[in-house]
Amino acid sequence: MYKSLEICAGAGGQALGLEQAGFEHVALVEIEQDYCECLRLNRPKWNVICQDIHYFDGRPYRNRIDLLSGGVPCPPFSVAGKQLGSKDERDLFPEMLRLVMEIHPKVVMIENVRGLLSSKFDQYRFTILAELTKMGYNTHIQLLNASDYGVPQLRPRVIIVGVSNNIIDTFVYPFPHRKDTRTVGDTLFDLMAANGWEDAESWRRKANNIAPTIVGGSKKHGGADLGPSRARLAWAELGIDGRGVAEESPAKGFIGMPKLTPRMIARIQGFPDEWSFGDRKTKACRMIGNAFPPPVARAVGERIITVLDNAMNYGSTNYKRAETLSPNVAFGQRINY
Image 1 (cartoon, helix red, strand yellow):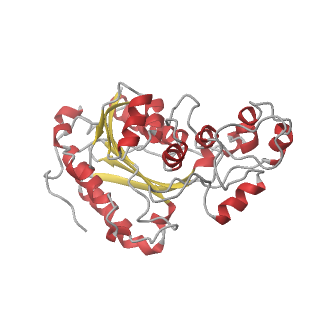
Image 2: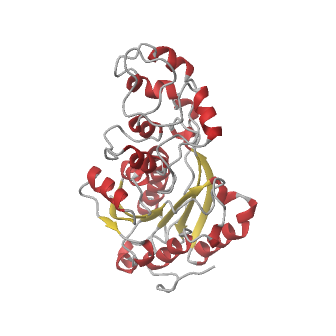
Image 3: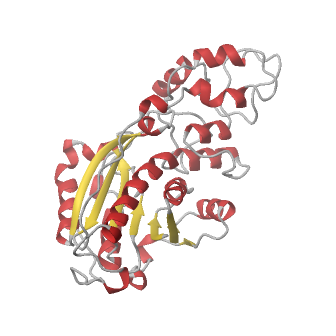
């Protein structure tokens, strides 16, 4: 199996999708204890490093990693925030680029929000891509919609992929297959009907579209809910009360719009039902809402696997095994914008 290292691993959405694609995780780095516990609970054999990425040294992994990935924090670029970009202390693009320089993986994958593509961040985005190019990577950047890959949710995400000049770059983004994406009603029907709610079938017919973007927020965010007023209106069109989150599915005799449970939200995010987020509702919803949908990570991961397979098997004249790759740049230097 190809080896990967992931930073900002969160609750494991990207890691799970990449595992499904065929990657073996050498290490997952995450700063928040709750998320680390979630990762260890679901995958006890994963090497979870609960550490601030600013203090994580990538040099021991140099030339030993096929894929370096990470969903660096989105608030610096999110339209829901102040969009401070590089001036936001949560901006971890410099740390990701430092680790690319230290580790020199064959492929780099970075995930972020649609806001990164706004004209406000043109110079910053160009700088990121230029730094990757300077370090010896062919770069790709594209906006992917989660609903094009089986996730019943409006969740656009920017995916940056860099392929080392040491291998032939055959990367292409996964082709969309929106027709295979189920509606919210079809996705959640069995869960809505689990406690005998008589109106589950009529609710399913009403919830005949994909969901708005699920939000996670920070620790400063209040109790569990499905977002601000505009998002709640979108949820109401699907017959869902977005003002809170339920502990259980609606029972027999329930009248009105049901609320989603954390398990329902996780399924809309593309997580399998067996993936546990603990038993604390607010904490679980924050972890789920901040996650990268596993099906999207899997789709991109499979394309990266194809690049690595082609390099190994089909005549990539520059390909060498990871242990013997020659670095393109000196490592250990921190990149500042």
